[in-house]
Amino acid sequence: MTGTPTFEALFRNCRRTAVHLEMRDAYMTSDPAFTDWKAGVLLDPAERWADWHAIVTEATARGVEVRRARVVSMPVSEYIRFEYDVTDGLNIAAGESVRWLSRRSTTGIALPGNDFWLFDSHLVLVNHFDGEGENMEVELTQDPEVAKLCESAFEDVWQRATPHADFTPA
View 1 (cartoon, rainbow, N blue to C red):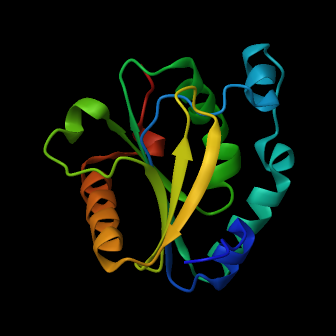
View 2: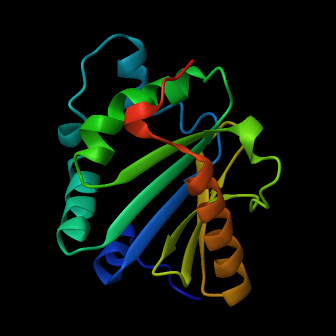
């Protein structure tokens, strides 16, 4: 697929489901929000990430089911603690459902090599990161086999994962 649409456009065009599988223990540790959090600065996630919050809130208000599953090593990394701390005020507040799964529980799941978003079970946005967790590029595909793998992996993780309200980062 040529000409990657913006993330906002992908959400605006989404009609039924948007699922996101995260599998890294750290992302973009250069993010000023993460730096502030580490320094003890109080964050209002919906304000800090107002654009993201608005995009997801608008989608969920239209009836799009937005689910996010996070595969994490235990005990969790400092970055995952940060994600956990902002999840209620950002993801949950915007209407997402979020679940967490210990990496140890994924051994029997065929997982793709990269994090992804899957829109309406057919459009896959693959996120590529460098070794430090910094964004490198995104790849968009409608390959039916890739979409099938991503959907299956997400659902397998989702079924085994713990809802955010019941998850305790150790």
